[in-house]
Amino acid sequence: MSFDKLGLSPELLKAVAKQGYTIPTPIQEQAIPLVLAGSDMLASAQTGTGKTASFTLPILHILSKIEIKGRRQPRALILTPTRELAAQVSNNLRSYAQFTNLRSTVIYGGVNQNPQVKALQQGQDIVIATPGRLLDLYNQRHLSLKSISMFVLDEADRMLDMGFLGDIQKIISLMPAQRQNLMFSATFSGEIKKLTKDILNNPATVDVSPPNSTVESISQMGYRVDKSKKKDLLVHLINDQNWNQALVFCRTKHGANNLSEKIDSLGITSVAIHGNKSQGARTKALADFKRNKVRILVATDIAARGLDIPLLPHVVNFDLPNIPEDYVHRIGRTGRAGADGVAISFVSPDEKNYLRSIERLIDFSIPLEELEGFYTPKKPSKKVIARGEGKSVRKSTSSGSSSSSRGYKGKTTSKETAVAKPKDRKPKKRWY
Image (cartoon, rainbow, N blue to C red):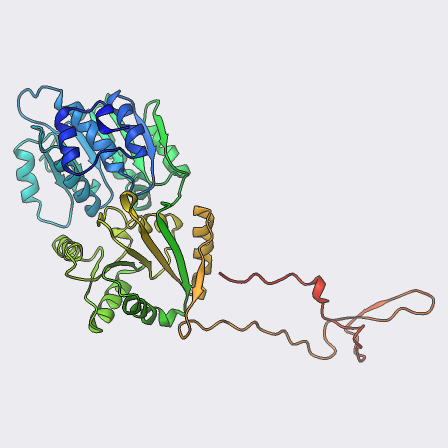
């Protein structure tokens, strides 16, 4: 099926063609007609499969058909968990809206609010926002939500992870009860399904992939590595395999800074982004990475959603995430729009439980390798049983009777051993 079969306006089809797209992805093919029909919707798709276009295109189509009377007020609200995702959605929406007369603006924290206030005062049809800054500007009476007819909750699971449930409920209370609601997420969880009952009205469900699955075009593998040698292993792989671009995920802001400084000092251009960085610094870092001014972008999970880097070849989990779902979103930065990508995980002995949780979630056993000099296998400990300790079993008597004794202090023979026979022992599970 081609885009012109979906019922979109000629202006939108022209914009889509200008972006180089001709055939809709499965999520777009299924979701766009449902949104155009006015249905509430709960949709899940693997990250990197065109999810954003599946709601921005029909929103633009619907709003462009409604005549604007008087001053422009926001008629559609798209709520995202992070600044990066808000900026990405805004950029995509503007590309698709370029041949329409619709206006949109993006609102998020970490930057001066004055330009955002000015944009709102000029009148906007669509607002893309993070919850905190949106409520802040609402409380300052810089915008009204009483004209909202379409509401999108993007990356809903991440919203809950970041503690935005209260803000979401507050925002919902500020909008008209009669509106079309769309909820999108790369993963489905029990909490998400509970949230749908409060937001959605008889929603259509679109699930184009198994829950919590990963894109098939991403090759997944890992290395067993000593925790103290992770930095050395990363540098080795960058140099040995001549990586030109890689996104590396750390669990903490401090760790991201340290790693970036370490590899940068070795002549490998690197920059870190995380929540403590100003929005200006984060935007510049991402722009430099996209333009290949820096080879390595080190990030925390705040960047796992919303980063859209065309043809990114490598994603590295320097630290495995302690939330399994974050693994899906991290590696989804590569292998986007059908391109191939490689996701590499560094697994130290203290992270084996994280790995098991991830593998259970994605229903896939990640193959692990070892490189000489970077991993020291832990030798199994031998249990030493002191002479005279434990249980001993005496030989049977001639009458066939037998007896056992606790703490038998006599000399044990090979038949009178306190150690379980090999066939009776439970085999030790080899750690991943």
